Length: 148
Image 1 (tube, helix red, strand yellow):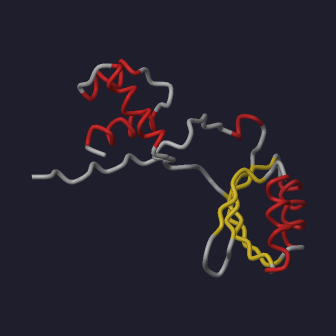
Image 2 (cartoon, rainbow, N blue to C red; image 1 turned 90 degrees about the vertical axis):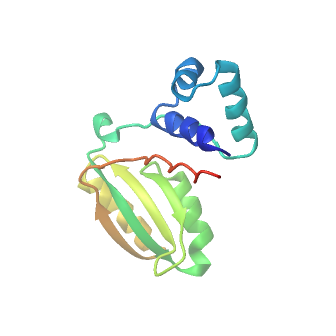
C-alpha cells in the first residue's frame, strides 16, 4: 500500500458514499484506477465493510455509554449470547485485562439502563461510564513514510 491508498482510505472513512470521480480528483487518478485500488483493498481485507453512522440520540436513545464487564469464565459464552441478542448493546469488544469485555450501549432512559445493568451483573463484575458527547469518531490514517 502506498500513500495514495491511504488517502483513498481516509476519503472513504470520512464519507463512504463519495464518488470514484471525487476520490480520483483528490488523489490524481481516474475513476477506474480508484475502483481497482478499492477492489484490491477489499480483496485483501483492508476494507472490511461500509456503513452508516447513526445518531441514536435523535432516535430517542438519550443515554449512551460504555460498560466494562468481567463475566465469570464459565458464563462467558452465555454473556456473549446475551450481548448479541440485547438491542441496547450496540458494540461488544473482547479485551485482555481487568475486564474482558467492553460494551457500547444506547438506551432510552435510566430505567432501561438499570434493567440492562442488572442483567449484566448476573454474569459478573462491571463498571459503567456514561457518554456526554463524541469529540470525534474516526481519525485519518497517517500516510506511510516516503521511500527514498
